[in-house]
Image 1: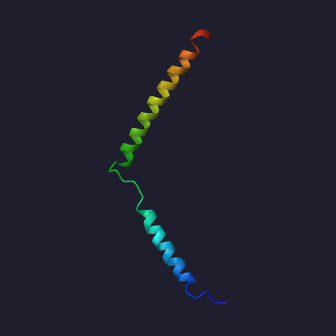
Image 2: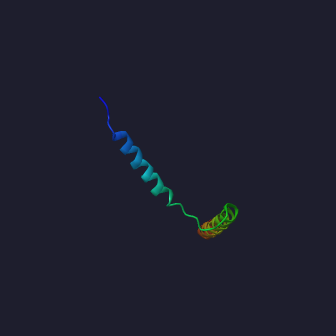
Image 3: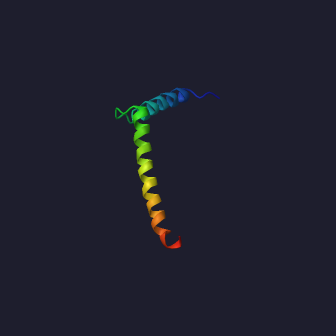
Length: 62
């Protein structure tokens, strides 16, 4: 049994799908290093808030 052009059609469909998916990448002009520093600063702020909340909840126990 032969598949005819089914394989070729599937290959073309997959190429089209990959090309469409490749265009969805986000590029906002931020370098990797600056994004890393920005994310680290956000995490430090979140950790500070969390630490403050923990300290407030444990004030009566110390």
